[in-house]
Image (cartoon, helix red, strand yellow):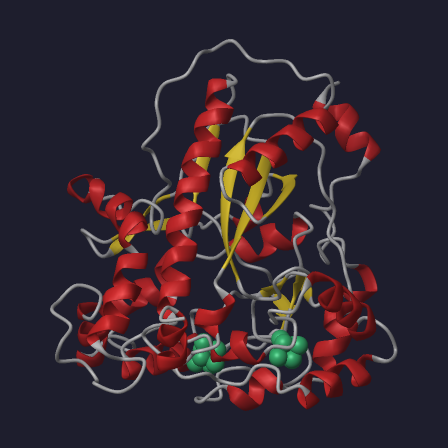
Length: 403
Ligand code: SF4
Ligand code: SF4
């Protein structure tokens, strides 16, 4: 079956400014929308922008590379905590550094390219549905915890990539013919996130990136072996949030991340751009917008007040906010400043979010049903009563290994 047949059956949401979320929209494109330039991403700015870069920035990045014994010697920030965190980033770092001599940081500023040539002959599928089902199965085989498929939508591509060598924008050019985007998600480890803030908890982030890198490369090679284009991307090339929403993986939450039904905001996304015709998934809602409207746990827990507690708006804190989208916004400068001061990334907002719990599946399903109903305040108070989102000591995490 042709791709036209597929989109005829399930209309593409790309023209819908609410990304298909309708009245429940918490991510709505406005008339003054401007595509985002990766140069304005807070991590790029931490290299070129004196408003962001400081001595603390250099120290923050140095903790990922240098001898670790002299960093903060408190629970969660010891040499062993940093050793684990930095090891978790190792796989993705190897790929990021592999082609630095060609002014490429693959996975962060440029797409991953460590792939073999493949045949021109294309494997034909019985239908786009069959192709989608197979790709999802293979993605899960290669380590994805969630997979969704949406259409290629140029609005979410960066206007420019960023060159670390020249500290300047560079073209973001993609080949012709790309039609679909496969969005994969890797869940971050729940027990590590319970120890946030700590250097130890950064291992959940790092391993999310490393695992995603392996999944993206293996799945892209498979698609190439089938005779189709496949471009694996991590943080590079395009914004992950709108693609993840369009691909039906979750809803936008007040903390500025996609909240998935299965893992809440505790996921890392990767994207593969392809011309393989597949059935499209559609955005879904499960009551996150309404729940966030009456929950402020992330707002209250953020140590630097970086999360706006107000209604979705076009609020722009600084140049790291995308212009022309009505949504909840986060002050990336304040957020990153806290990361620098504690010498590790922070996920306090993820830890406290009631959608991020390590409950057994059946309890999680029941809680989500309640949270998505008019009884959402009961769901909120249940989470409070059981002490959801409390911080555990890093030493608690290490002690598990002694059992
Ligand atoms: S990561 Fe930490 S500093 Fe940043 S918004 Fe979340 S709680 Fe605030
Ligand atoms: S902590 Fe509450 S307000 Fe924040 S994203 Fe989670 S559910 Fe929404």
